[in-house]
Amino acid sequence: MKFFTKNKMKFSFVVIFIILMVVYFYFYFYAMAEDSFFSFFSDSLLPELIGVCLEFIVILFFIDYIQKKEEKNRKIISEKRLREILIFFLRHIDTYLPEDIKISIEYPKGDNNKDEFLYGIHYEKNQKYLERLIAYFKEIQLSKNDENKIKAFCKREIATVRCLTPVVATLHDQNFKSWIRIMFYMDAIIANEYPVEESMAKIISHMKKFEKASFDNGWLVKDD
Image (cartoon, rainbow, N blue to C red; front, side, top):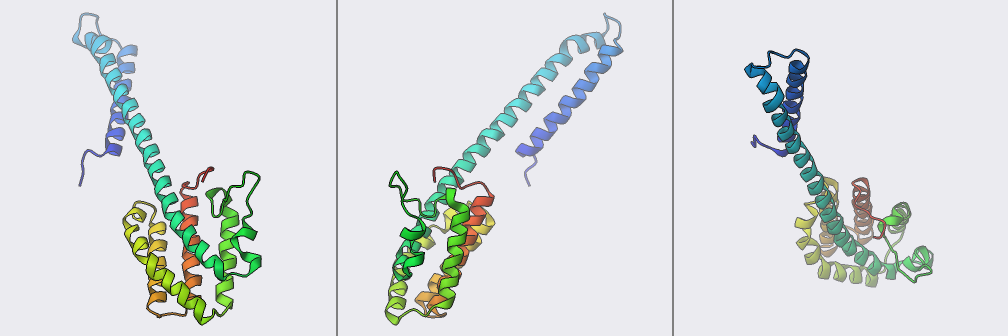
């Protein structure tokens, strides 16, 4: 158990600062004789202690702000890299989708010819699109050939998904849970434990939860 944690130090210095200010105002309004020790303490030593304490408070809060900002930026970068894997997965299964829900139809390129599929700025649109994909895989029956292609894809990519687990662990608990479940259903497809359509619906469902967790924590940025 850490005794001198950052939050405890911040709290301690704030309490000390308040106490010193109370003592200062006490001496200010009820001053002792000018030649007494109390006069020296209130006029010279006490203001110095208050100043030092205030400096520590400012430094601690400033450092805390910088650290939190850097941590958030690291998580934004990590989340973006992880989501690239999910985007790659969805682009692969785009081959098996009907024309009306293909990526090129749902996410047409803008005037700048930029592909913004599953970008964070389209969070609400992404959630609705993923829900449509879930409903699609719940309703259809894939051909044996398409099932084998998805199975082969999962075999190729499962190692990459596993390797990124430590990165996911630095994010929110829900991000981590969703990533683990995605791995589970990819393994299920490889091992023929569940119907491919059911596993695909589950995988996309956990992708949806992954993105929601990122959105709730403020990791989806405008330019992403």
